[in-house]
Structures are given as C-alpha cells and as structure tokens.
Image (tube, rainbow, N blue to C red; front, side):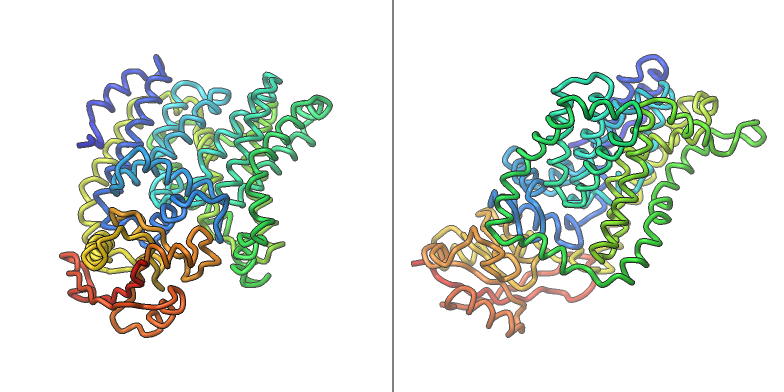
Length: 508
C-alpha cells in the first residue's frame, strides 16, 4: 500500500534545508505525488464527475492522430500509461499526480536562477496549497496535461538563451508543439517565446542565428501528422471549438473575471507563505522589488514574459474567437507562477525557521487525509453529475451478459450518456471501443463492417425510447434486448438501484 504521508519524511527533508536543497526538493516531489494520489483515491468514488478521464482512455486506445474535440497527446499518454500499469483508479490518480510532479521538477530547475536554497524549498512546499496544481488537476484531461509541457518548454527556452545550443532550441520547439498537441490553448506558449525573442534587447540577436529556425522546424515536424489529420478530416477540432462560443458579450464578461480568478487560485499559497511573517518585522508586506529585479537579467525578463504574456494572449484569442474563458484555462499559467509567488515573500523572511513551512505543509496534508473519507461520503450523498454512478459494476455486469449471450469478446459499445458508455473502455475487462457521441463520424476507428463482424452493444436507461431508436439506427439493427439492474453504491443519494436496457447487435 502507498504510504501517502510521513512526518518522519518531512523531518528528514527539513534537516537538508540549506544543505542539500536538491535532495530536499526530490523528497518533496515524491511526497507530493504520493500524497495527492492517496488523497484523490480516498476522497473520490469515481474518477471524476464529468467523465473526462474515462473519455481520455476511450480515445487513447484507438491511437488516432486527433479526436473530434481535441488533439491527441493527453489521450495517448493515458493509453500508454495503462499499457504499463493496471487499469485501476489509483493508478489513474497516480498519473495525474505524476504529471504535476514532472512540472514541479522542471519548475525547480527554472527557479535555480532566481531563488536561494530556502526559497526553493518553499517553492515546492507552496505547491501543495495551489488548487491549479492539486485539486483542479486531479481530473486529468487536456487542460491539466499542458502543465508539464509548459514548464519543460520554458526551461529549455531559458537554456537556449543562456547556452545558445542547438539541442536546447530543438527541444524548446518540440515541447512547445507537444503542449499544443495536448490542447490548442498552448498556441499562446510559442507566441510568448517569440514575442520575448523579438522585444528583448539581449535575446534579439538570436534571430540572426539558426536557433529560432531549428526550434520552429522541430515544432513543425512534431505537429505535421496532426495537421495532416486535421486537413484530411475537415478540421473537426476547430469546428468543435468554434461551436463552444456564446458570443462577444459573454467572452468579454468572462475576460473581466479571468485574472481575478487566477489571483484567487494563488491566494492559498500566499497565505501559506504568510506564516513566515512577524508583526512589525520591518519588511514590506509583499516584496515587489524582488519581482522588479527580474528585469535586470535576460532569464528574469524571460520569466516576466512567461508570467504575463500567456494571460494577455489567452484573453485576446478568447475575444477574437468569441469564446467564454473558463477559469480552468488559468491552470497552465501555474507552470511558472509559483516562482513569482515565492518572490513576493521577502528573502530574509524565507530564511526564518526554514522547517516551519514543512511542518505547516505536513499538518495541512494530515488534515486532508483525515477528512478525505468524509468528502467521499458527502460527494456520494449529494449525487452530483456522475459522482455516484457505479460505472465499474455496470460495465463488468453488462460485459458478462454479452459473453453469456454471444460467447464472444465485447468489441464495441454505444450509448447516449457519454460518461456511461466511455466507462466501458476503462472498466470492462474486454476494453471495448466506444462510439463517440453516437456518431461513427466522430469515431472513424469503428466501422459498420466491424459492427457487423464483431457485434456491438448499446446501453440505455430502461425507459429511454429515444436512446433505443438511435441505437438501432446506429448499429443497423437490434437482435436482442436484455435488462440490467445494478444496486446503488451504499451511502449514495438518488435511487436505490440503476436499471438499464442492453441492446445487442449480435456478431456474425
């Protein structure tokens, strides 16, 4: 069993503060990954309430160059992860936490240029308090998947500025392209780097070298297969994105709250750093001078660009596309934001009682572990969205019915409830393909010939006649209908049982 937290480990880490910051950072990153894996596993019944995580997997196992909503990288990562790890929820939570762990490792490498040893430890400790690195990214999806690619891209960009090496430039371009393959919002990342390169007096001479062109070429090579897919499929992801907008007025209103929400997400870490202050300590409340001092160096100005420009570009692109800016779009900004948060604490205060921050962090983690079972119980009782749907039991029992009826592997599943249908890919042992949004156009890896050869099953709520009608049209015919009843999870709100109709298109 994973040991999610150990005060002994914290004490061990604390003794290394100021002596071996690298070792302390490594301990904190491992603790971060293990703790948030454990917390997510204990505090949740299902993976997430929206069904994103089972959808990720249902897409990924098809290994397409794109999907009708998003580019493919985050789904590939999920599929590849579960080629190594068992298809258990705890390992999905481990993936989400490990993704942030990679982000923190890159962030620490970036911070070496700006923070001393004590500040580096506080950087990692403060990450435990940032919702955009913890609670909000426990739902692994396209947005949270951007984090490590943003951090690593910026790390190699700074290395390119400092060392002027071709390999760093190539890696900068490649990782920026991978960030875009996670989610198109990441287009603001290369825009940010290009803008800094053009405007910074010390960076601008690089334009006369081969380095920017190597970075651009590497990015184009990485993106080329997906771009070719988009052209071949008539740009489904762009059409999907265009359909999400609600007009310029809604876009403008969401833009007005975008930055304040990001500030609110940063406040818990700012409050954590407040434990290092004393009344009348003679230091400013916020050390804005340390932020301003970043302008003195090339790396510092690059960091300032990475802090400000992605926000500006995201708002501008949102307004141009007339799309509503979700508060969750602030998540990738926290790939570098924690450095600025730590710099708000005066440097002398960061040296005060260096173990104090680790002890506060430990108390916070212990408290969360204590209340995690109660959060799980409250979530089940409230029955919000898919929080209490027994996806695993439904998928396994439905597959067993298919096996009993056909003696064959369950190959294809459909259903009008996306989360319920996609759950079969993750929870059913046969790992069937799922027809997305009841459309073969959205699911080109499932063909009518495959359905005829291997058969298919649609799952509908027992009284949902519209689902039955659409399923018959989608699958060609329905040969048999079998009822399925699954007991509700103990403690869950809502009905005492779940009833479905399984519509079977039998294989040839």
